[in-house]
Length: 231
Image (cartoon, rainbow, N blue to C red):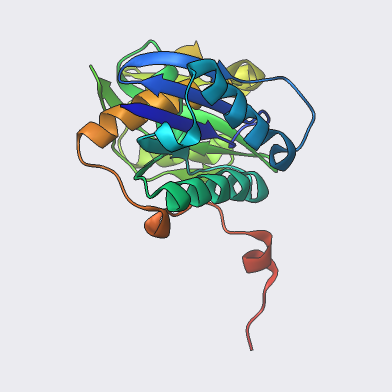
């Protein structure tokens, strides 16, 4: 089975090509180009590295959020289009779930991703072997409020491992907060390969959809929703 995975939730649009459980190609260039400019080129490079064509892809996987609205729409639109043209199934993977997949640690994991505007995206997942399950909903809050919410919901700090690509930037706030005693692991900012692994696992467990029903996981409302005032 050939699976193509796409992630546009981070600053770099990364693409991974996987055959069964083997990673064949990972394209993650460091560039200032917009996702809309580089993404399809990255996809073409990945399938070329695999010696196949787009028509040979059996299933797509995409990080459906949380992340920046415009960036997410680019990835989802491209994957929706390819899945529709070639009539292939799609697996949606949370970016926070992909962060947990990329971590070496297991057990209770608390992924933390920069949401900008002074906020983070965060959640609580449990990772055991190949299975990753979310224990709480995904939040977008200040880091301080996120930790307070976890304590309120009786998530104990010490069994947890904080994971994320920018944990070092939050070191001072983490050290001064309720989860100062938690273990920490800095993960890769490139997520397409983790999305691919989760895609293979979720597809094997019947967690696929089609292009029509693929939806974004924004977590945070858009600026238009925040600014709109009803009558």
